[in-house]
Image (tube, rainbow, N blue to C red; front, top):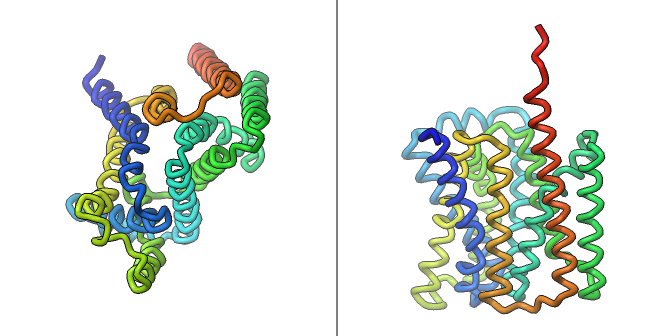
Length: 300
């Protein structure tokens, strides 16, 4: 394996493993109200990314990109979507629904495809339609099993899917883009944290030194996998990234079932198995389609 591909694959695996183990970190902060924790994540991620951009000397290029017509509007939408995703993820972790978060990220690629059809007027091949339909059947099965719609999983999938769709038309790279997003959210986050402090609800410096350090660490924890992913994306094909991305929900699923002992019945297994089958068919169909395109003769 060429060194470039080897290091890129290692970086992608590391990023997806960190994202997959995220529930452990947020469980340690369960004494902090979710909205406060999201605000701290925004603040400290902004600080951490600002340091990286300063070290790389990218402030001028970031400032130039911000002045591009429509850039603020696009990234403001992205900022709102990622904050919703972060908040729902925390609510799910706090409520003991780690397995449901994994479902959200399992079906996220299929949500992306569906959004491409509905919003970008893209056309799906027969087996892609079958995969989307099968995943829908899996979600319906889980709804009937639990007696309610798995709204946290769907909120994660659709917020992240819409976020990805918005980022498709964005001009900045992953690091600079998240820097702009957190900067746009920073005033609201700081105001809310100040309000919590003034009303005696603030957790920062009031819930123990370990909790305070972990809150500060949310910036590094949020930034590290993003940097690894950006490193990997420049070195390996998107098809390999697409396969490796399932490391994250797989680890989250295993954490929920094996570590946190969340309820997981045989009926739940049926619903998840239908979703997994949909993803497998979707991946095989995509791999076959790419291979067929590569074998097509190049016109003279």
